[in-house]
Length: 143
Image (tube, rainbow, N blue to C red; front, side, top):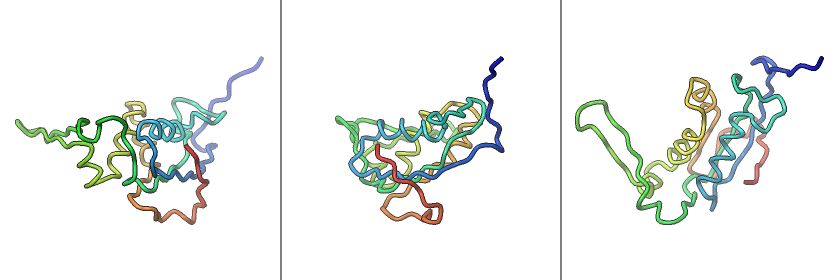
């Protein structure tokens, strides 16, 4: 009788991938990154175990949004106090914190559970072309 192999946390080997966000569309890139963080491209993929790899994204400030989303797409946050809602347009978010734009897009594509927080910790986003993860020898990933 054949049985399905279930991955264990100790058996998972993690690779490092480097993604250049220069002139990439945000949503299309975020879906690929989310799949890598979850480990869906691995044969050992198990939904209840974090089997994903590390992803380093560089040039976040050069990300592209289609249509009129730079002006129209809004990101909201709330302080928890009455009247404490804040909103920021995607265009202003790219100017202030381009890393957050990619992080929020990928976070929305991950499952809504405790495992997603562990997956999101494996995402490293940098505004410019430099990153401190050269020692891990990340493989360049074309998206």
